[in-house]
Amino acid sequence: MNNGMVYVGSVDGRVFAFDSTTGDRKWQFPADTNQKIGQIYSAPTFAGSVVYVGSYDGKVYALDAATGQQQWSFTTGGAIAGGVTVTTDTAYVGSSDDKVYALNLTDGSKKWEFSTQNKIWSTPAVTQDAVYVTSLDHRLYALDPATGQLKWEFEAQGALPGSPVVAAGKVLTGSFDRNFYAVDASTGQEAWHFEGQNGFWAQPLVITDTVYVGGLDHNLYALDLSSGNKLWQYDAGDLIRSDPVAANGNIIVAAQNGGISWVDAKTGNRIGDIRQLGQPVLASLAVHNGTLFVAAQDKHLYAIDSTSPNGAQKWVAQT
Amino acid sequence: MPEITLAWNLVILQPMLNFLILLYRVTFSNFGLAIIAFTLIIRLIMLPLTLKQLHASRKMMTIQPKMQELQKKYGKDREKMSQETMKLYKEHGVNPLGCALPTLLQFPIWIGLYQSILQVLADTPNGLLSLSQHLYPIINTVWTAVPLNNHFLWFDLAKPDQGPGSFALAIVVGGSMYVQQKMMTVPNPDPQQAQMNRMMQTMMPLMFAFMTLNFAPGLALYWVVSNLIGVALQYTVTGWGSLFTPAPAPAPAAAAPKPAPRGGKKKADAKYGKKR
Image 1 (spheres, each protein chain N blue to C red):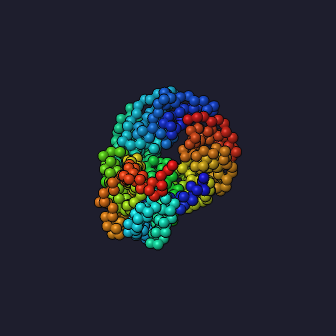
Image 2: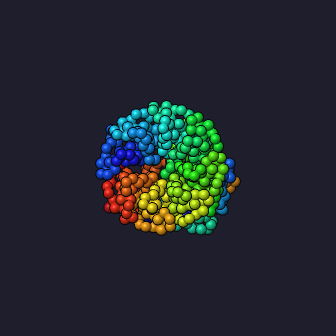
Image 3: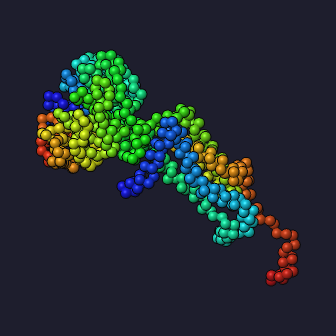
């Protein structure tokens, strides 16, 4: 989101920009309604007046944030299911061709690429020291941001489809082996892991010293960041694939069945929920200026009041 | 019909899917070998029924001369023919359904296997997400195995490609099915029935060959292995059966009515007297 605009990609193969207050559509890409790009599984990234988005057609697109005009595109060797991470001069993206790419922000030319042994469906996490990438080959990789050289790799027991998060010197990521891992960001040694009842796919949320992560076992877990001990868990009613968000001291989580819950961040007690959405929600949630944005599988973007657990709907737009 | 879907998933899909993944682990992470192993195990489980079917088929062959006699005697009286046929079956302990039951039981296996292959070899985010809901929580091995490697020889086991490899597979599927069917065919004295049997022998293999081109190659691999096992089993019980027996010539057209014998009228007049 930026400057009163919210950007969303659709499974139909289009990128949209809406006014975040009114829901009016400002532009769409491709502009021609008869054209599409590949399905878009991850949220677009906004940086410096450009919107970056990866598509299932294997391309990364850089679009003018104000008009939707394409500035450049880069073609990888496989479908892109994850998002694009952007720093001051580089865009990082993983692909189903097993590689992670670093691209020049100005023209999309490739700086370097690094090969893993299976598809990358996640969004890279980037710090000054490293680019962290998870792959379906069961590994978490730490790469030099400038050169792509391997610093270390950590191997879990199962595939790592979800996007990692870096917090307090640790890289946090969930796995299909039903474990949620915290790995030392400098050395790649496991700090701790937490075992759920099903895999983990959603990107975790870190607030101060607590990690909130949704599992495919229907539970939202709150874990102590330093030890991995479980503080509480909340049953959302269906698998959680969507990344949770925080608003007003609450954690807002969406389950695949469309149920959206407001949960007290300290206790895990449900404050309220809305069930009338009724549509599968797999995409990340986003909160901005008191509004919760939910992209549902029914090809609609819902804007819901995030300050009230009753979740009054502000507007809905078709994507 | 969510209840039916739930029951199907619980009883057929999920056990099959999890078992396939376990076999994948055992067969050096090779899904083609896992399907072959799966086929062997299924055929082993169904062996008693299959042998029963084969023996029933052999008994049918041995009573063929008597069936032909019945055909000559009651050919035109279908009801009587049917009665006498059932009597003959009973006398010799032949159960016509015994020949069909193993085949019927295979249908849910084919459907379940096809669904399992598509689920297990999912290579999209939504596909993997769907798969996660079918994996048994208590078996850690299945969790650590996915996503599976879907290549075997030159095939992507989940995707039909209709290239030369798929055509070759279709020929093998159709050919092996034809051989198996021909071996187990019981010659039928009824020309109409025999004609229908010949049509089935041709149409079924062609149909399966066509399906091979359009369905996941993993399913075709199951058919090939299953057919080859079937041929081997059939051979042990009946030998080559009717495989090398040429199809009988079609029944001749009804003969033209013979002219009345000479003197017949005079003889009839002598017997019954002339009409006045």
